[in-house]
Image 1 (cartoon, one colour):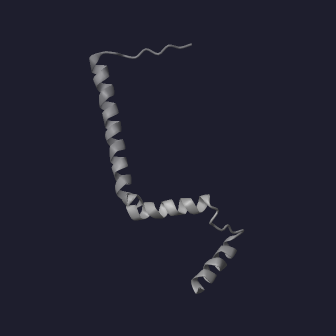
Image 2: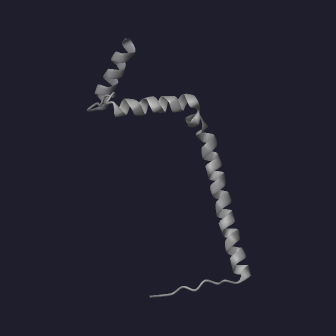
Image 3: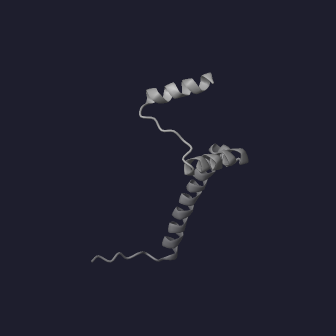
Length: 81
């Protein structure tokens, strides 16, 4: 078994802290971008639609299709009604 030694000098600790802070700042920027790009998802209107869709799934209120052609035919027939 190999034991790794970690340099524990104040300079080494500060260097590691700087590296971690840089990584956290990058992560924060990435998360901010996601929040801005996906803010529509968290609107009350969208969340209500999500809840309705989840309920439909739980209650079996959905259709499945064997292939794309059948799905498109279904959409066409729904558009005509």
